[in-house]
Amino acid sequence: MRIGNVEVGEKALLLSPMEDVTDSVFRRLCKHYGADMVYTEFVSSDALIRQVEKSLKKMAFSEQERPFGIQIYGNQKEAMVEAARIAESMQPDVIDINFGCPVKKIARRGAGSGMLNNVPLMVEITGAIVKAVKVPVTVKTRLGYDANHKNIVNIAEQLQDVGIQAITIHGRTRDQLYSGKADWDMIGEVKNNPRMRIPVIGNGDVDSPQRAKECFDRYGVDGIMIGRATIGQPYIFQHIKHYLNTGQLLPDPTVKEIVDVVRRHVTLSVEAKGERGGIIHMRRHFAQYFKNLSHFRDTRIRLLNATTLAEVMEILQEIEEKWGNG
Image 1 (cartoon, rainbow, N blue to C red):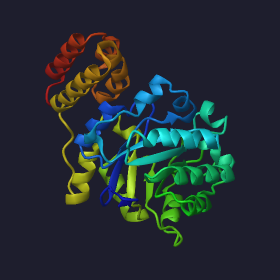
Image 2: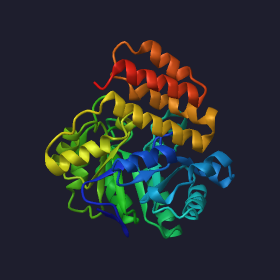
Image 3: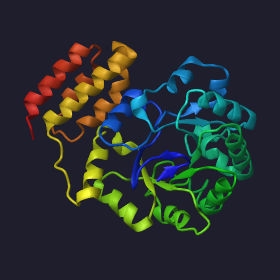
């Protein structure tokens, strides 16, 4: 799969942009385990124009993360174009436009998936960004705003016509948020539309190697973007790739192996954000890494309340000793 001049690989696996999750540390970890492409957390166009430090920091990345995309969102053409130029100055491989975030405070002001209520403006903004930057522009969106307006086949054609180089489709409407099952039939309908020439990437509910293979085989997508299933298991990319290549499942990681991943993750997080910031950022990940351990409630609470790296490392050692290598 190629996105413009960017080679991503066949049956590509991409890490979905996720707010408060896909920082540089997590992106590097996922790349280590086989993610073919990674993206920033989404960045507000208005914040970029105002030079908000937090938003500018979101765009920082290391060379080992390539191919790498910066994702921006907003609802004003001029602001989005200027934000795309600012993002381009960071030298990403791709600029991705978020037309998919369903969060109420984003969508109700017409940004993210709220743009699905104004397709002409969505297309206008996209075309203006394509003309304003030299790097490939891609879009991530949903099937439509609600069950009565699943117009992604037509939207995808229009976005392709103004110059995007790939489209990622989450198989739900904005109104569904993350409830119900992702509708991959409609994603497949876009991919199999004879008018479509650009790569089509599917997203939604891929949480196992078997499901990934089914989506590639049944719907013919060029790539799969994985989001929530990576939290607490960045090694899912490695497991999926092994299954796609060999037809065999890797064994589930042992507790010791998971602890080793967490040690690496938290150490890198502290190096990047300082002790307090790095540990606070890890709490969402802590809750997921050990979700399958029985009788873990008290230890989980201690882990989530830890405030120093030494305390976290001590609890991780206890987890390894108590739950063994099973």
